Each structure stands twice: as C-alpha cells, then as structure tokens.
Image (tube, rainbow, N blue to C red):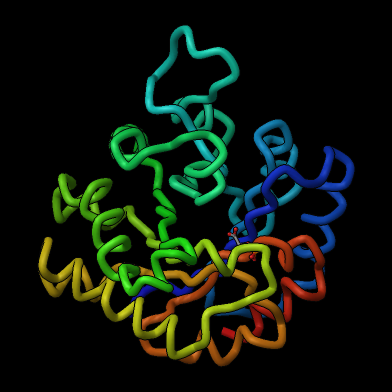
Length: 249
Ligand code: PGA
C-alpha cells in the first residue's frame, strides 16, 4: 500500500507566534488518521514548529532548499541545515519557485539529487500551465518535467520521492481540476514512471494532487485510485479546513 499524505504548504504566511498557534491548534484537534500529515511553514519558523510538534505525528517539512552543501549563496539554506533542525522532508519545484524565482528543470534536478544525498525525502511539484492544457500539450509538459528532473535517479532513490501534481491554473485560483482530470493525469504520471523505471517503482510512489483543494472537493478527488493525497495551500492555513481535508482521505 502506498502512503497517503496530506501536506499543508503555508508559503510566505504566518509569523512565529501565528505559526506556533496554528500548529498547536491543528495538533490538538487532529483525530485518528491513516494519512501522514505534514505542514510546511516558512524557513525562519521551522525550528519552532518542530519543537511545538515534538509529541505529535505531524511532520514539519521545508518549502525549498539550495543544492550546495554550504558556501557563498546569500539568503539560501542547505539540506544539512534543514537536517540539523530535525527536518526530514523538503518540497522542491513548486510552481511559484519556477515562475517567480526562475527555477528550471536543470536546477531542480540538482536540488533533488542534493536532498536525496542528504537523506531528505522530496515532495517534487510539477504541473502544466493553462496555455498548455488549452493547447492539448499538458501531457507532454508534465512528462518533460518529470523526465528532466527525476529520470536520472536510480530506482532505489524513488523510495524517497513523493510526487505532487499541481496544475498551475488551479493553484490559488479557486478553480480545481475535476476528479476525472486529476485521475487522468495521475494515471498518466504513474505510467510515465513505469516507462522510465518499472511497475514496482510506479506502484509505490505516492502522487499528491494540489490546486485549490478544499473541504468541499477533497473527498471526491482523494477517492480516485491514483490520487494518494493532497498538497494544500490556502486551506491549510485554517485549522478546520485542513482537518476536514485530512478527514476526507
Ligand atoms: P492552493 O495551493 O491550495 O492554495 O491552490 C496549492 C499549492 O500551491 O501547493
């Protein structure tokens, strides 16, 4: 059985006090779940969140990292620095990093390798833009993103890869892919992994859907056979919404 995961990507939201308050609120109200639950506060609040969640099953994950171990990279954070504060998982390739910070497939490939070499698990994000879908090029774009960043890995490396398919047109827009669109793409992604590696790797990899997941649409998206959970932005900033989404799995 693949792991089910619900991860909250808090992006550049919540200061220190708000972060501690939100993680404590979520942890105190979280009931039994078979899903792994993750939250990704901003870098400066990771340590505090790790401490606040010490006795919780909720995992604190990072939103980004640099590929180098250390050096003259002003403003950047390395895998080793994340590990030193108890982080075990990092999100790489979010569409906002690609769009606003110029992150290319080539750069992301380096980041993924550096994360895996440091024994971090990677939540790798990718997905097509609206124009790609409108022109019918979405499958090509998605396959290209996967191949360029992940297909030089070994089959063994995939144990530490989680995929997060996030169509850019659905992120923060309130417009969600339909459950059928999500399933169609997730099945295509799994098939692409079979072609690049093998059936065993493809069957084992958790594929999350992200893009305007809300309490009202989570259950029907998560019910699809190739959707193994969600990467949640806006709705993960409200305890009740995030918990309802976790309970939908
Ligand atoms: P959203 O963001 O849920 O606010 O659309 C998803 C994401 O960016 O991961």
